[in-house]
Image (tube, rainbow, N blue to C red; front, top):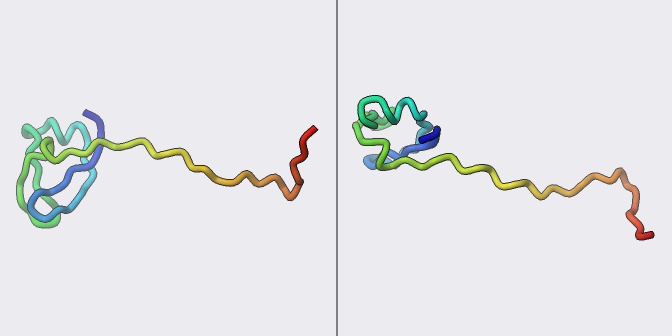
Length: 67
């Protein structure tokens, strides 16, 4: 597993979690918000790559022409 996010099933708080944290204590973590313990592996959301941005290209005000 890689780094990602986990979701507290008690209060729905999401927080970042590392692969090392997921393997320690058999995945058991304590929510920093509601302080309830849960198995982060069952509520794990892997990081998704960001989609490419489709930004307009600044052509410096020069009009494009076809040859």
